[in-house]
Length: 118
Image (cartoon, rainbow, N blue to C red; front, side):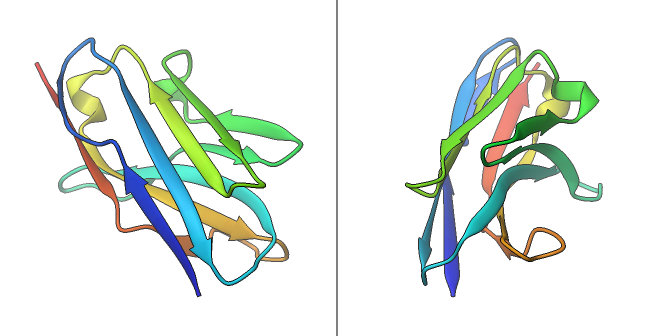
């Protein structure tokens, strides 16, 4: 089994910044990508950003220019650097791993709460 643990979420004022961290552990696996998703109250979980190791990063339009994803595949860690936070960024942020050969993200963390006050 693979475990993902997120950290870094907290209450922050609009315009502030946060860095979320995620570490994967457990059985040996080959990671194709790691990403961040979020779910706001009353809404579906949505894609935020991901990194395909050795290839590219992707972002949803609403965070482009404000959020940056980075990580280290060898250490099975991924970060989400969030700047210029807005109240609409308030959500539970989930880290996910897509293992090699998987068709989608197949392991998920428990989430970390980010709350942005106006």
